[in-house]
Image (cartoon, rainbow, N blue to C red; front, side, top):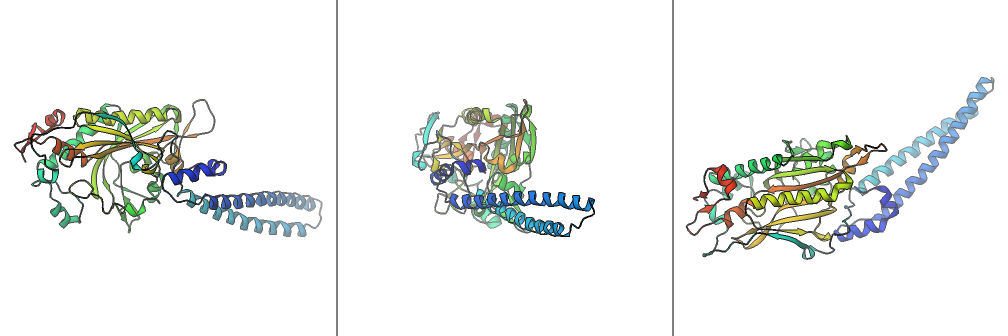
Length: 419
């Protein structure tokens, strides 16, 4: 959510940001409503002064034994008028808040303008593997352990069912990722897999992405679409000390997304599914260290891929490819040898104070003064199952086996999988 002062002083900046993100907003409607509300507030202030004057007059007359009925009636009438105006102000505030939820965050000044075609590759690492044979896609390599038909019978299309070595590989990767983060100083969180609407709104999944969410209607709960939701909301309506910052968290969650807007995209195999596993990194940071913290999260996630010896590239997303809530985002993509394309495995985002304002997440400055909003950041560290796609496809051997990275082989007890 954006600061109301910004909306009043720089409405064109807000409108331009929405256009850059392909969001339709009506900032003039907000300005008109805000102006009407503030005019009512002036009326309320005048009436309150009038009522105070009447109260003093009534008090003096009663003390002097004079009739104060006329002033008392005027005071009652003023009170009734005040109640009506205050109700109207409350209604305006509700309308303003509702409109504000549709205003996207403003991209940082160094974010490139344009669509995904204008994303900028800022760094690449590793060598794309070469093969003496035609590499197979993961759905062929995993045909005995990745069972989409069985998953469809149980839950419907685009859900995952692993068994055998694939199930064990997934469990191993999750465990390794959590250990990697906690050894770097992050505090592990095991959070609920469902969230209330207030939590979804705080991190800006609602109302923007409601159609993509799985909702449990009877209980008015949502299946979490990303670990960002429950982990960030751990600090909703919290006031921290400045010395508490930074807050560095990580946690595992299954993630549920209907992907309502993704029809027609590549849905084969594990590329796009309705439930996927992920380990999330979340950070609450002092505003002065926000940009530095963003790069730290990015390099930490990229370092995991280097340990796994997976080629990757990092993209700075353009405004049209930036999420509703993000001020700046880097995507990390990994190579899929069987499909010969790059796949996103992590988005590392800086939301500045956008989520913190929605979720009322603040800290008390050490030197005194009013509480300030923290900055929130997060990133996938990392997302499955695209990580499995890359490991399996890039590690395939001429004899049909799959060679694992050393760190995972040690945990699996074997460096080669025989499908």
